[in-house]
Amino acid sequence: MAVIIDGKQISASVKDEVRKEVEQLNQQGICPCLAVVIVGDDPASRVYVNNKKKACAYTGMESREYALSGETSEEELLKLVEELNRDNSVNGILVQLPLPKQIDETKILHAISPAKDVDAFHPVNVGKIMVGDYDFLPCTPAGCMELIRSTGVSVEGKSCVVVGRSNIVGKPMAMLLLHANGTVTICHSKTRNLAEICRQADILIAAVGKAKMITGDMIKEGAVVIDVGMNRLPNGKLCGDVDFESAKEKAGFITPVPGGVGPMTIATLMKNTLTAAKVQHGLKELK
Ligand code: NDP
Image 1 (cartoon, helix red, strand yellow):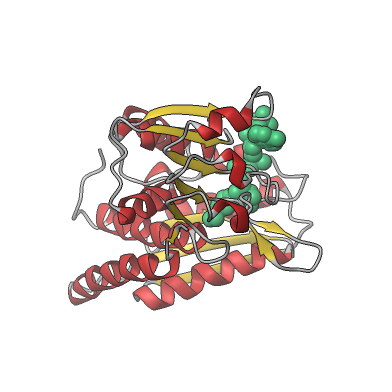
Image 2 (cartoon, helix red, strand yellow):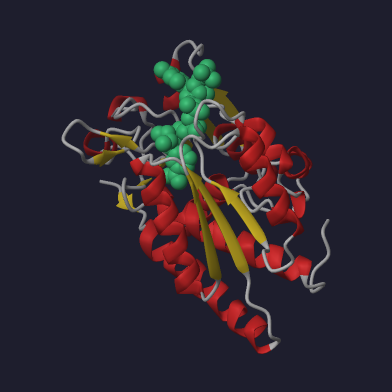
């Protein structure tokens, strides 16, 4: 029976550390500020944005919300991003995804100044993550690494399997595991023998977006299982990519959904906003 990794508790201690540092900055007259841009009225995006604003309030940072209509054009959004890039009182810029179909997400993410890119989605920051020398942490993967660290299991030399290869989760996750000296396999929709590959994993990360697709029989006895998936079931409940009930019988450690990776993603965002504020106030240099 697996030990359940408590993402809520671990994220609270990360946010407490951020809060202490924010208090110190306040004494120097600095209040880190995160601009959160939401376009349209997607209910899931609204929940994420509210949680990010709550985390800012908890850590003592300012959050400024820019809620735009779902009809907003790409030009209008680009104009707002450029204004926020120039605004010295804004340290971090987050554009909540997904964006409405008339807007090219890539264009918007590339327009955010790399120094204010607290999601670490700009190619400059992605490149730095690839090299292994970076200022802004990829939020979800760095949160997963923190959860793995909390188990006391070292990544070094371990077989790590990442299911999913998105730019936001799968690829940077694989990079962080590689930097930590794991032996990394990345799986995707064209992977053959997924179950067999998963069964080799000492550390298994599921980032697919398919409810309960990783079942107990795909898990190695004692493995660390990190479930990034956030899927809405027909009954309205949230559920991960891992079938928690069968997986917890095989895994050594496992994250729940909700209460696992989700809170860590937001805690890491707070860390990045703090970093951005320090950089813009000359207290830290960009790498
Ligand atoms: P994407 O849809 O961008 O990527 C999904 C990946 O899963 C793709 O690489 C795809 O492969 C792969 N995949 C799809 N079907 C299979 C399959 N049958 N077998 C193996 N691989 C498969 O999703 P994201 O990476 O953005 O998100 C993944 C999940 O994580 C979602 O549930 C999302 O909601 C959640 N999420 C949670 C966060 C959190 O904070 N907890 C943050 C971000 C995301 P291919 O490339 O071949 O298409």
